[in-house]
Image (cartoon, rainbow, N blue to C red; front, side):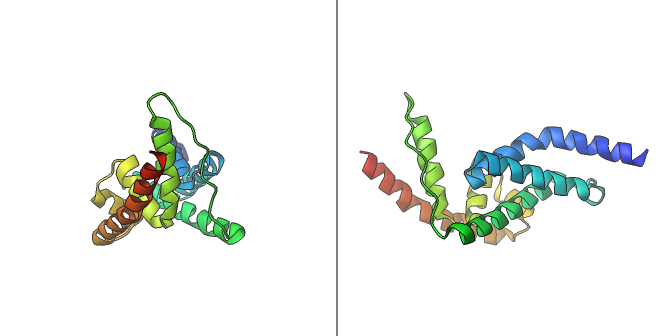
Length: 166
């Protein structure tokens, strides 16, 4: 009976959070397949520890697990590649939204993995700094500092891209 309840609770959590975790992982990694795999790995880790965490709000824990998996994957990949990732191809739609999204996606690669996670959680997931702090298990002031430094790094990159496109 206990296993069935546990599985039912996790299934509800999975149905609600899996698509969001997958989208976040894709944004963090810049690769749909790798992002999907990492989101699945995070959910698997969640399932194995579900007995301990299900009484709390498991969403921040899931994001923390996902960010840590993405950071580990990033470190492994950087060791393998020893070079920066190729920028995405230019794609233009009528309103320029796709081009802008690709420009921003390429720009976030100048950030460290934790800064990239903070920016994506803040602006893509629309989380407050306090929620990001809880999700990443980082002090609130560190999250604020990470966000400020990330935006300082992004501004010149995005400004340069705007000047080049004119």
